[in-house]
Structure formats: structure tokens, C-alpha cells
Length: 369
Image 1 (tube, rainbow, N blue to C red):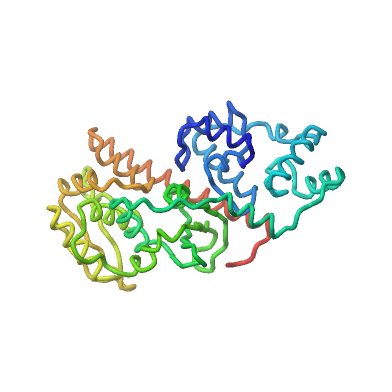
Image 2 (cartoon, rainbow, N blue to C red):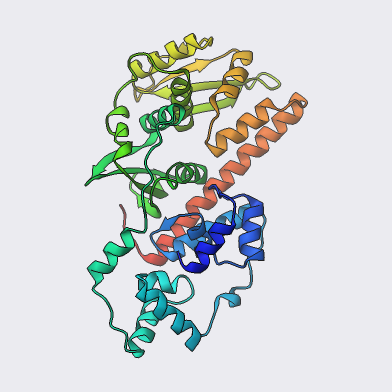
């Protein structure tokens, strides 16, 4: 971040991703930050400033915030600007960091060279830049550990990368990328990129670099919890697994009767979930495998579903929106109408997110990953 961004971040309350409408209004309209700078204030790192801009603009549109006149982004390079660039470069910032989304790194390079500045060795500059992204260790919280393990079991690729732990996933849902960002950005740099997959088509990849305190994810995502676990750990694990692979839907033949299920191809895991739910006072029924070997563990009793949803403290934005509607005390007919509207909004969000990935890749000319 620049000194300007540091000051903004310092004077702002803790900002969680996905961004709240009032925070976006303050940063974009009142403080008049660019989309790329807003991404940096949230602690996000993108493969390109264009991706950062497009992602933030997606959230601006989603929150009904009109985009400023594009001409405002065009700024003439002045001597005062170059003076500031020289100072920032001497403090260790890269050409790309200095230019941001205002000008390209080549423009910055040419102006610095015109000033006769000795450009430093690229490798040393990269090492210095990497040190700026400090990784914050895991604090040992039982619920959070359970949540991360349950979520990883359902939807994460975890590998050791040198001394770091690299976490990856991909999705066509903006809510999933927002959730991953909110989970990982407090602990290390994250990267979000559009890509073209042979199986899924246009989608978004997510990657985070964590320190060795997250090593428990390496083996934990491949095994079922064993031994006696704390109440908080069990609830966290169930919440993480449900956010990754759980489902909430309504029975078609009732006014407003929710159903929920955990899905996985591991019978051992689903039996552990069933046993854990039983100890918490809930009854769940294990179904037969489908053609892909995936089974569903379903809860059918409405009163138990409502109670469990209150206990789990889910983090997935889409599921949280569904839970909020399920728990509302309004007429069943109105809730069902709002449910249909919510599902429609989620489909539109997904289509726009996929279209955004497609347009960015077409501009960039990337191949299939």
C-alpha cells in the first residue's frame, strides 16, 4: 500500500469482505478512491489491476452504487507526481505498485529514468515486496479450526509450498470467492484470477499463502475427526462442511417447509456427522449413493432444522441469506415469494460473475487452464 492507502486503512474500521454498501459509498464516492485502491484497502491482491477494478465494480453495481465518470481516472503526470514516485521507489515500492491503476509501470519507469534514478536489482526488489505481505498465524480458536477443517474437507485444495501452506479453490459463485477472501485475507496474501476450465468453463480461481501454523489443514482435510472433540470444534466443523457442501431447499408441496442435507462421497465422514448431530440432539438420515457415489445426510424435522441453523453460525453469504429468510417470522406465502426472488438474484449474480471472468480473459487472451 501507499502512504495514502495506509492512512485510509488506519482511519477506517476493520473492513470485512464482501464489502458493505456503506463502506463502498464512503471509499468510492466520499474518499473517491479507485477500484484498485479499494481492493488494496481491503488487503486483497489480484493478478492484475484490471481484475481488481472489475471485481470491485461488480460489488458497486450489486450494491446499487453508480460508477463515477471514467474521465476522472485520467490524470496528467506532473513533476510533483514524479517527485512522489521517486520517494516511493527509494522506499522499496515496485513500478507496478507506484503506478497503481493511474498509469502503467512503463510510464513510471521512463519518468524515473529521466530523473537519472538508479533502478535497483529486480530480484532484491521482489524479495523486499514479498516481506510486506506478513502472514498472521492461526490463533488456535476451536470453532475456527473446526470450521476450516470442515470447509477444507468439502471444497479446498491444500498443499505445502516451501515453508508456506497454499490453499486453492475455484468457483463460479461470487459468494464463495467472497467467503474464501474473508477467511484467508487476515492471515496472508490472497490472489483472485479469472480462468477458463475444461470442466467448468469460465470461473474464478482463489489462492492464499498461509504460514506453518495452518499445517493442520494438510492431513485434516483427508481424515475424519477422531477422539473427543470440544463442543465448539464440532459445531465449527459441521458449519464449515455445510458451507462447502451442504444444501438448503423447500419442499414443493408445503407452504414453507425447509429441508437441509450434508453431501459427501465418504460414508465414514457422513457417519461421523450423523453421530455428532445425534449427540447434539438432532436426527439425520443417510441416503443411498447416487451415480457418482455421493450420499446425502438429510434432516427432515423443521423444528430441528431451525434449531441447528441457529447453532451453526454459517459464514457462506448465500446460505446466510437463505437462513435469514427461513428464520423470519412472516407469512409463509410471503417467505416463499421472497425465497424465489432470492434464488433468482443468486442466479443473476452467478451469471454476471461468470460473464466478468469471460470478458477479462477475452481481453487478456488467456488459454484454457
